[in-house]
Length: 478
Ligand code: PNW
Image 1 (cartoon, rainbow, N blue to C red):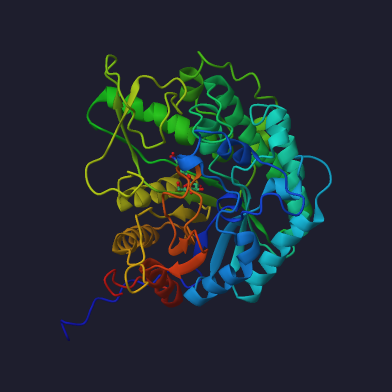
Image 2 (image 1 turned 120 degrees about the horizontal axis):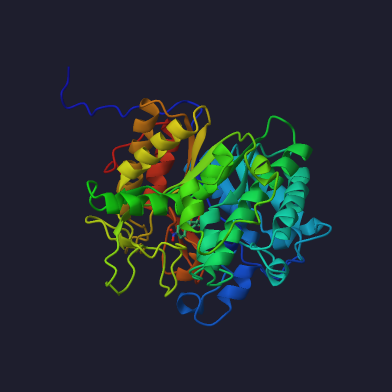
C-alpha cells in the first residue's frame, strides 16, 4: 500500500445535518419595519454604556432585506440546514394578542426560500428578544410571561408548522435568566439575583407550556427541542473536595436548574439548598414540574468552552475571570464561595479557551443522562479577528482548526455511541455579538459592515467541503 496516501477521515452518518445558526436580533436589522416594536435588546442597546461603542442591532447585517441572497450563499457553500430565530416583537408587537401578518410573512418567505434550496430549517422561537411591553409588565421573573410565550409559540407553530419540522423553544435560558437579571450584561440589564432565579423557573415553564402549545397545532412528525448552553465545569484541583463542591454549585446553577426539571422533573436538592438565602422557590406551583418535564424529541447543546472553578479564597478581591462579561454583579446567585479561572493554552478573541475535549465530554454526559434522546449541537464556533487580505480573501486558519477539532470531537462521540444528528456552526456570518457589538466576529462568512458585502472566509469553504462530502477535510487542505 502507498504510505503517502492520506488517512481517509471517518465519515459522518449519511443523514447528519451540516448547518449554520443565527438569531433574529443579531442579523435582521429593520427594527421599525412592518409593525415591529422594540424588544428588550433594542432598549438595552440604545441605553448608553450597555454595548461596546454603543452599537445596536438597528441595521445589523440587514438580513431582513437580504435573506434571499443569504440563503443562496448557504446553498452555494453546500450547507444542508439552517437554524434561525423568530423575532417575537415582529409577530406580536405587544407580546400579546393577534399576530401581525407581515411579520409572519417574512418567516414564511424565508422558510420557502430555504426549502427551495434544499436547506432544512430549524426554528428557534426565543433567542432573547422579549417584547419590551412584557418586560415593562415584569419580564421573565413574572409567571404571566410564560403564558404569553405559549400563546406566541402557538401562533408561530400554526403559521410554519406545515413546513418546518425542527423546533427549538428557547435558546440558552441560562443567559436570559442570569446575564439578563443577575449580572445585567444582557438585556434587560437587571441585577437582582432573587429575580434571576424566578426568571429561570418561568423560562422552564415557558418551555413546558410552549411545547404543549406547539404540539397542539403542529403535525405529530415535527420535533420539539430546547437549546441549552450546557456547561462543562471542571475543578482546578480534581483531588480537592472544596473544589469539587464548587463544581457542584456551578453545575447546578448552569445545568441542573434547566436539565433537572426538563429531563428529570425536579430541581436538584443541592440547588434548592444552596439558594435558600435568596428564594424559597414558592413560585414553583403544583403541576409546573409535570409540564416542564414533557417528552422531548431532541436536545440541543450549545458549546464554546469549559468553565474552570475552585473554592474561592475568601479574602481575594479582584476582577472576575469567568468569561461571562464585565460586571460588578455575578451571574451566579449564592455562589460567592466559587472562583473562576482562565485555563492555560490557546484562546479565541472572546478569551475563551479552545477545548474540543469539552464538547466530547458534554455529548457523552447527555448520552448517559438522557438515554435515547437524539442530540444536536445547535451552536459551536469561535470569534477571531478576521480581516480580508490584499487578495480580498479572508484567511482564518484558527477557525478552520477550531472547527476541525470540535467536529472531530463530535465524530469521536458518535463512535463512542452518542446519537448526534447534526451540527450548526455559530455563526453563518459575522453579526451583532450582543454586549460586544460588532467587535467580535463569529462568522464563517465575513461581513463588511460599511457595505454589507459578504465574503466567505476560508473556514466557510472548508466547512462547505465537509458538508458536501460528509467527512472532515484536513484542516490545511485549503
Ligand atoms: C451564545 N456566556 O451566547 C448565543 O446563543 C449567541 O447568540 C452568541 O452570539 C454566541 O453564543 C456567542 O457568544 C452566549 O457568557 C453569550 O457564557 C454569553 C455566554 C454564552 C453564550
